[in-house]
Structures are given as structure tokens and as C-alpha cells.
Image (cartoon, rainbow, N blue to C red):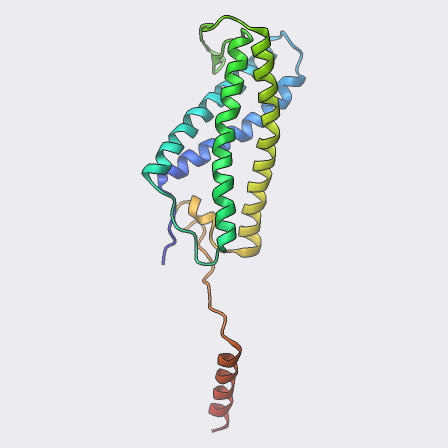
Length: 207
């Protein structure tokens, strides 16, 4: 029996978000260590901002889609506690994926550094520069990075646990059909039932 999975749309949105985040994180480190005021530095910042806008738009779509299309049920071997924890982390991820591009965008606006999408398409300066507000949103953006690191680490640890240890098919919910099926869950016989089966087996062999 095929396990329940997220739809192709949900899967695509998830993996687009993952790809953007795994590009944004190293970009953030490189751009903050690059020499300021150079075309190379400007390009890194523009790509970082572009990917952030993509994450913001995709996350908004994912939240709307979540209510339109609820997630599939978990495989039968997943404990209730694990399901609750996954649900909490899921919404914390959404909160952080909104927080980071919004604070980063406001930092850009009030810091008078308009986004150049894909390092090609310039955007206008929509608000008057404000150094104090830029500093505030910069601090909020920097603080949010630690939540990003923690949630990604927790998410990857949970994936590894379910994939290597539990083998319960949780990862398969976010993969195409036949990519990863859950291990069949076999009920554990009670002690008395196991003894009866063994006695019946011995009796059949002796007859």
C-alpha cells in the first residue's frame, strides 16, 4: 500500500525553500566577510536579498496552501509526541522564514540599499532613509539567524533519526511516489500469545 504523501505542489514549494536557504546561509557568511564597496560584495548582497524575497513569497504561498490542502497523515509507527513536536517546529519554521526576509527587507529600505533583483533589476528607494530604524531591523535580522540555525539543525537531526534509526517512512511524505516507502509495521505479540505460538509449533513438529 502506497503511503500518504504531500502533493506535488507542496513538495515543490518545500524543496524550493530548502534550496534557497542552503544558498542564503553561505552567501550571508561570504558577503559579510567580503571587501565592502566592491562590485563583488554588492553582487553577493543582491543575490542574498533576491533569495530572501523568493523565500518570503514561497513561504506565504505555503501557509495559504497549508489551509487549502492539509498535510497527509503520519505513518502508523510515528509516536504522538514526535507528531506534536514536528507540528510545533513546522510553524516555528514558517515564523522564522517570514521574520528573516521581512526584517532584512526593512533593513535594506531604511538603510538606503535598494534591492537589485538577480543583481540586474533595480528597485526604487521607497522610504526615507532612517539610520536608527536600519540599526533596529539589522539587530532583529541578526538575532533571527540563530533561530534559523537551530531549526535547520533540529530538522536535519529529525530527518536522520527517522531515516536511519526509525525507518518509518516520514521522509517519504515529502518525496515522489516510490522514492521512500515506510518499513512495514509488525505488531509485537504479547508474551502469552508468543508462548502459545511456540507451543503449537513444537506440538506440530512432534506429531
